[in-house]
Length: 302
Image 1: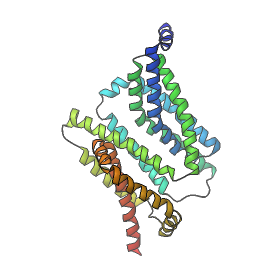
Image 2: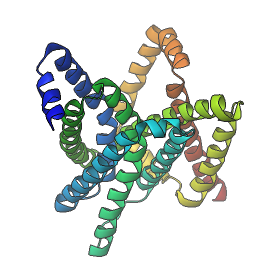
Image 3: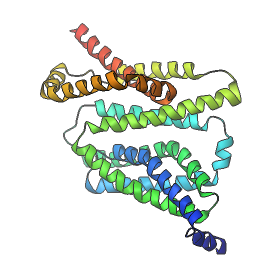
Image 4: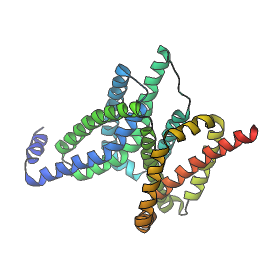
């Protein structure tokens, strides 16, 4: 107890105040992904159910972070933890993608609402386990074994996630198109963890590059799941959407052309030097091709 009080008073010195500021900045940057994920998981819930899902989801995630903080060194020694976390996040990406592509339901009875609440909490718990690994290790390194700084950082991240996730869920509910941005953020984190995890397995265990094999398996799995569970797009609705948003699409097209013409080389260099962004773009293009292929399959069937 005396050690904790001493560490708390140390936070008022210039050195530890900067360390605490560093922890808070890390939490702002790294908790953003978690807030987006919680917002995505609770976007279909309303009122009391949404607040319950956010509360229990964050509470369980907090307990999980405390446990991970205690076993951080042990987890670092396990080869493949980040890779497994990345695969778990890929499952979450598929779950969200299937929900976004599913037709809207007009009504939900009470049992469906309860199932939705439990499903949201379970999704938050699974995904936060993956995302919290880097967060816990980064904050623990910045705290330099100062328990008081770790505690303040943890409380700050909880408040930040609770406030931001509720706000994000409201915007996602009002503007469904933003949900795709949230999906891409989670996809990027998943790809980053898979790349980091495969590199760790390559260097410490198998000593050969397993990334092509992993991408082939994931790609084949997504093709099978997409064919089985995703309904092809409705051509009439798609045409109506394009007609109603012609000006917006044209504006983004001109902006994209302008960016490519003036900053194309810089963007290409940046993407080549950041493999996570490159592979995330590949995955987005892959999903787009699956959508086009499913639409072509329906037209051929007609």
